[in-house]
Amino acid sequence: MSTPHPSSDFERLVNSGVVAVMRGADADTIIDVAQALHDGGVTAYEITADNPDAMALIEEVSASFSADEAIVGAGTVLEDTTARRAIERGAEFVVSPTFDAGVVETCNRYGTLVAPGVLTPTEALDAYEAGADVVKVFPASSIGPGHLSSIAGPLPQIPLMPTGGIDADNVSDYIEAGAAVVGAGSAIMDADAIAAGDFEAITETARAFTREIEQARSD
Image (cartoon, rainbow, N blue to C red; front, top):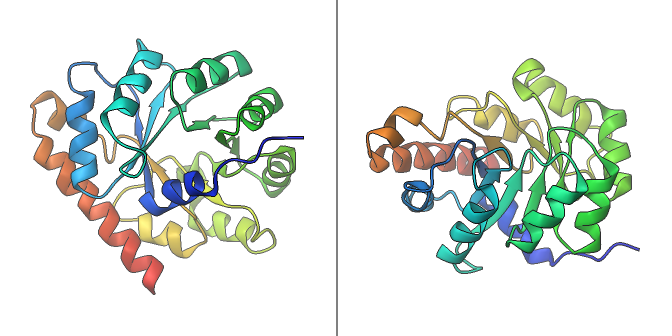
């Protein structure tokens, strides 16, 4: 039997509205970037496992915020060994681009939120019945919000997190289509702004995301 995760973890993930996918994050700037996102209202950070020193970065960002300020997780987790290492270093959620039963089982065992990647209704239900807390609908840009609503319609019990190609201009479409939360990478993690040390630009983009999400949720 899986260990239930604290409901507050799920609520913190969803309340952020958007999970910032921190792929290629740099140790010298990651805290500044996370703080800039936080200042813009984005409080969920996914540090991908293909980052150099990803586990150390997870630990560092986790230590920079209290539990009520932010939730930090690991992304691009492909197998159970990486999932366990991430959890040991402080990851509060684990995201995968695909559905691997071992990753889900490991996260369930340690009471950690898990969001495997799916594309179809069958995959979404299989992952959810295996113990997923959220299913990552990926790549969202290939299918659009109409596909998301087609999954949410018959499967309203499954929290959906579309990821891939989502920006401040289309995020409201995905929320209105049934997304519980979205994942965003380059659209919210502007590489040029980070390289230039323009963290205020990151904050402004985060604010644009959160503003659109709040409006879509209130409609």
